[in-house]
Amino acid sequence: MATIAFLPETDCINTVAAQVSLSATPLVISPPYESVRWVTHVASQLASTAEPLVLVFHGETSVHAPAIGFSRRSLRRPAVGYVLIDPVMPTIGGDYGDWPDAPVTVVITDEANESAKEASLQSRLRGWKVTTDSPQEVLAAL
Image (cartoon, rainbow, N blue to C red; front, side):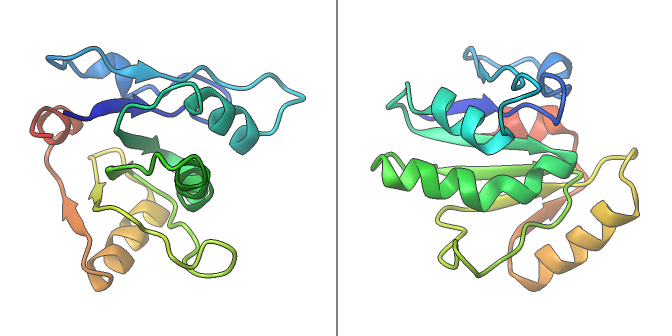
């Protein structure tokens, strides 16, 4: 069974983590200190676990999904899934051209801004699952 890992938002803990109730205790990564880069901080925090992880991104930090996925693969502990909630679309190709390496689910909430709605259209074109179900429903079903 995979562990749900809530990755921090830019400057705070993933706000979705407090809104959902899961049967298993999720892994909640703390936000980085001001002088530490987001990807470096998150990758180092995730390196301490060998568990299969479903990585949950919220908002603009979704652009870092390919880099975090790459860091997990480099540890030979790839993610088993990605959940992008109201995302900014990650760049596909470039240094992380083989991303995604696991299924991607995009959740669009009522609070989604225009960039998240645009990301949902791009996600559908890529064959990713896009849903308007609540994050609670999506994460509880994993």
